[in-house]
Length: 201
Image (cartoon, rainbow, N blue to C red; front, side, top):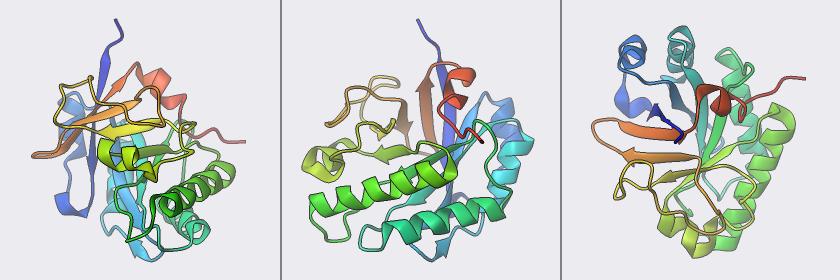
């Protein structure tokens, strides 16, 4: 039986995060919000990115999708923001947070997500995770994203037993709690998780 690796995710809503305390408490990986849309940078991102690194956590950065905008511009903005905070190292993770449609049809949202992911994969040399929740995916907003690892928000299900929506066949990270901080598990080892991360040339 594989063990479940413990993780958290944070944004500006958490303010200052005590990364050493989380690491001491058994947290092995974390995602911090970097950007939203094409012009919003999370003011805590650089501090979080460096705090995770200093505490020897597997580092993850995520972009909150605003599908009404230009996905390539948004992807470039995200990668520039991560670079400015110290950049990607081998094994670092990235994710697209896909949970709002901005009033667009599901097919348009899915097209935005595919283009964002492809740009980040090509230019960041890392395959993004897609963070979403079951009903959003089941409504068609994630069409064509099954090649990207699923980070599923499903706090109503027991830890490690989330619902897996179409188009995915299985999950990679399960966000199983959202209070007082978002808590996640990865089904595997630290080494297996970093294998899904950045691979420099």
